[in-house]
Image (cartoon, rainbow, N blue to C red; front, side, top):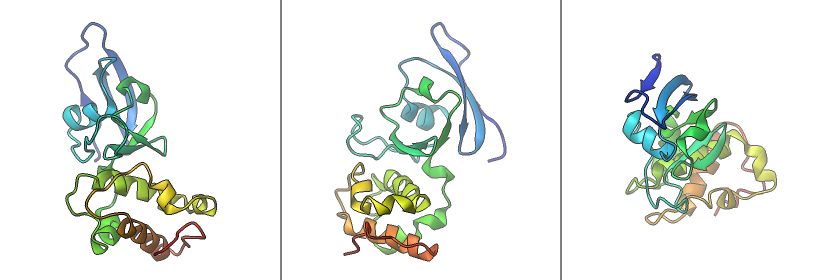
Length: 173
């Protein structure tokens, strides 16, 4: 994506103009103080990969990276991303999903974007596995179809492919 993303309806009373980095590109739009990050991503910026599951921050389907950390975008007021970095599932290389497809962890697709975003964060930060298990780090992502063993195996496979170690926290089953 080499063009600037701009979305807006024109500044209405009470709206806030925000600029932030979205998947490596600048984005600017006017938001209502009550708009959620999830909604602007899906409905205003045309990025439907981030899913809404529970709207309560319990399921992780809407996980995105905010300044490099996983967050539930259904809980983030859009104005809070002003000046920050947001990364969605659309920013990830589709090849990064190969390990999850191979392990059968992408069945219905409802949780897949959030799972893959969180898994990519773990793979980028293998030092976390010195003190946490993959299962613990994935705890914010619910999956009702596959269970979690395939997801954990996919993370371990990706770590090993990148020449890293899943460390003592991997708990490969």
